Length: 134
Image 1 (cartoon, helix red, strand yellow):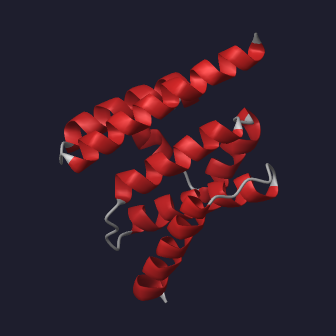
Image 2 (image 1 turned 30 degrees about the vertical axis):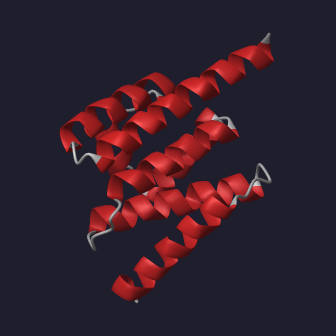
């Protein structure tokens, strides 16, 4: 029963992420933000703007307090990455990418999860940071 619930939740998140990717590809930022807000409120009980404004310390406290399932953490990292891609040097982008890296660290260290996709995204982030902030 619990396994079915988790699978249903994962399917719902996967479909939302696919819709978000479609909106991003179609360059529909207002619709992207509206759908991201809906997803974040339903799945994480936070609005996109509130999430973006959290410091990395506040964000880490949120992760600790909420103890999200690893698949939800994965979706959150993908959402933040997708929202800021292509990356433009700004304080907001830097803060969001730090959050993505924090989630990737949590997935690897606390949940022993890693993927080639996340490794590639991590490398893209590091390259961006090196080119723009070092």
